Image (spheres, rainbow, N blue to C red):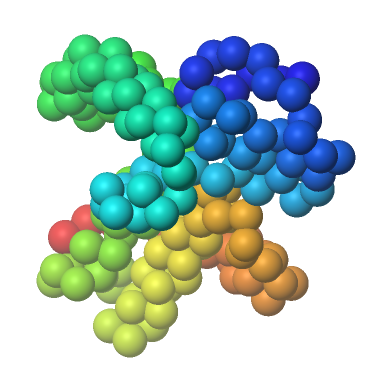
Length: 173
């Protein structure tokens, strides 16, 4: 037994491999810990995924969840505007910062007109690429189950993090 995240009721394991909610169609594979989340899909894609009453219940609970989260999202919007972060960002602060730093350094690389005086422009671009890779890889590693971590990727991530620490005070435009 486990609780379905959408309908908040306990559901039985349908087989030894999956949890399956017959109300909304949510399932989770126990073997690879892969959760199927249907966000950002069009109505026709949802209808292909869920048949009959499951589709109706899914849409119904997604609308309720959206409405319940609306107040939190508006509150978080104003918190970010006031101080740059929201309380909800700290629930997974490492992911939030990884995304912000990756996107910020990527923007800095495209729009920079300065660099540390002892580095050439080409070398500075390589350093910024390593920093972007490190934080982007760190962010994707937490959200994408299918990402395969190779020794090269882990080494490059570690190198990018060290470069971020070393050149932290040089990240300016």
